[in-house]
Image 1 (tube, each protein chain N blue to C red):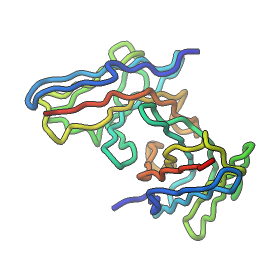
Image 2: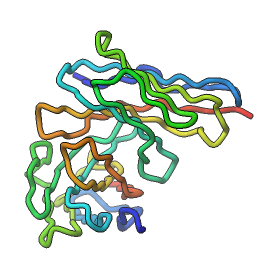
Image 3: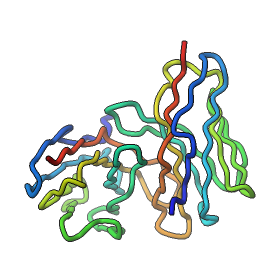
Image 4: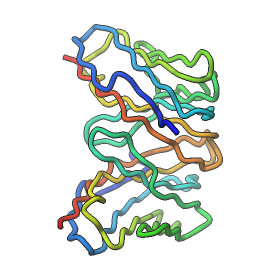
Length: 113
Length: 115
């Protein structure tokens, strides 16, 4: 059973508009969440993270929101740029175990000029 | 600063053949991870090293997969013999330490195709 779920395989957004990528999780022991971005033929690169004691973390155009009661987090990109087109992975770290990351299946974002 | 280096980038082999992947982590990173990423899926952890010790290999299929990190720096992941279902991208990642929320840095991966 998937512990980290990204239910939208793809998302298409116009340049300049907001991109919202969603992620749900089932394990209440997760204490740290990360977003990774992946271009074709490259490894995932770290984008932004949030601790479970916070509900928002912002870094430039990227903001991650965490709703612990709903076991839901989202990544907002404002404004979206064509260079943001990539696959975005949500990952969660289980503080109760050895801290390994559990990844979702990813959402492919396409930002159209 | 150099990132995580992996080789080869691509490998095509016949089933039942052996194959090995090599990874050199970022200098100073004592934690090293091997992941497998199947098509349309996220990365899944195979094994995690703290220095030269494999501290979590619970997801490594030990009948055909093996890994080593003898000097606590670079690492090799081996499959012998390879099966059709092993076709995937094998990613190596490294981080400073495990349980402090330190981000993992990934290499470009090795795309394995088993025919």
